[in-house]
Length: 368
Ligand SMILES: *Cc1c(COP(=O)(O)O)cnc(C)c1O
Image (cartoon, rainbow, N blue to C red):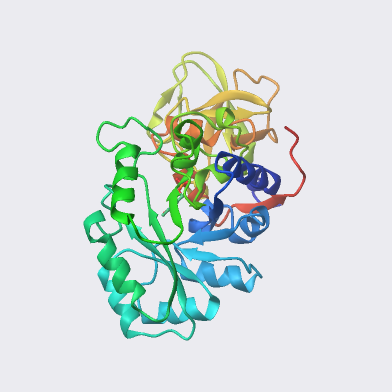
């Protein structure tokens, strides 16, 4: 028998979450963001879970080609665009759209004429200072692109740094929106603005961030970009990472658990040993007290997470023993809660699920 750890991917939850994103921006088309192997959920499953999306967006060329080979015929967008001339050929052959964020990419496109015209997404840096042209240089980049005969449609895009906190003291989303409008003034083409955090802000910003396309990622997987919880946003977990108790220790007061003896039992207690460790993608820095579910009951981890195992406090679940089901995150244990306890974000936990964890697909529909 294989180790009992599995990551179950809930296709119905993916469909539900995509519908939630669309409901926030009913007039916009939706890219479902599937970079990093669909945030750890697998491209094949994303393709089915997000069959209703208007396009799939990612950063990996091999993934983009695989989407085409698996039969995805709607648009595909490479969010970092192309890196060399061979990429331009790949984009032309597989009909892939690409973001363009720097003059070097434009120069490459001027020199290498792909067989088919490319649709591009011209990216503006509205204050995040990651990728993109500054607003005052945006129109110049646009004109240079427009002059290239093998450029098709040009979509105008930007990315928000703080859309999860509309009143951010350093860079409020409104400032980024204003810069975008100024920099893109008078330029034709569809607009693409909002990530999940932006999508969540739409209802109380009267759709100001909607544009023609939205680009939700984390919310489609049932995680949040910060702020409120998945339940408050009406999202369902797309992945349940579950395992089993494979051993039990009855420890006495004053005894220690795990590497570094970081947890000391205050009294006699039962400790469950779970087949899940950092080599499965569970964060090693999750401290004692990180929430976890055993036999449907919420309890806590104790001591250090090791490579293949972690320890849990069985005090609230006296009936639990070897074979008891453990939910690390997913149904009944929001990934965001585990992430917060471990000082990280749900994105990182989902993306880090290791290849050795068996992925299984739950095709049943979830009743809500
Ligand atoms: C990753 C990414 C997104 C999706 O972001 P989420 O926070 O996961 O919704 C959208 N746009 C771009 C450019 C991205 O890189």
